[in-house]
Image (cartoon, rainbow, N blue to C red; front, side, top):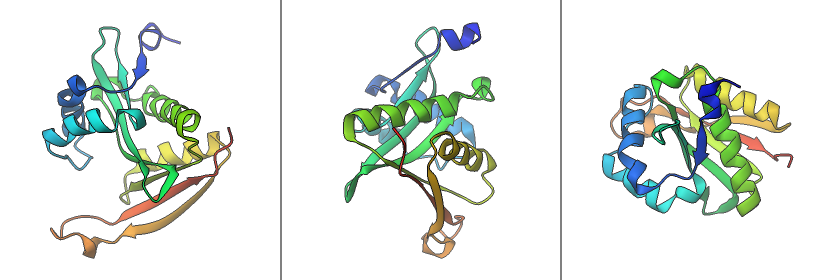
Amino acid sequence: MTAAQADLQIDRPTVADGAALWRIAKDSKVLDLNSSYSYLLWCRDFAATSAVARDGRGEPIGFVSGYLRPDSPRTLLVWQVAVDEAHRGRGLAASLLDGLVARTAAEHAVDTVETTITPGNTASERLFTAFAERHGALLEREVLFDAGQFPDGSHDPEVLYRIGPLAH
């Protein structure tokens, strides 16, 4: 473990983190950027199913946002995963995802993780494939929304990754 990793803290986001999470998502240049307002609301209303990584100064350097599916409350839908550029390549996204899933499994009996990934997003494909392997879980893929369903006409399809059941 490096000194930087030793100083790392992973916990629930707060409203005060909303602006930083929006910036990290914006700077990723990969994620669909939501309004800054939505990140503030997310940090308020979905903190229990999201996680933020903080550096030694307490500043957000990465996050995972998620929610429990209303029609399947033991399923955690991971909405976004982002790590500040200066902190990429150190396994932070995997640590965030593992920590969030462990917490939601303990608090909400989560046994399945879902996310959507656009074709060609190799980093996300690797992250979630490796997650399934680490947790001894099945990984199923299917197109959830095809390109023609997006009203702006400029969106790639979203492929649903369903991982579970998770071994606890």
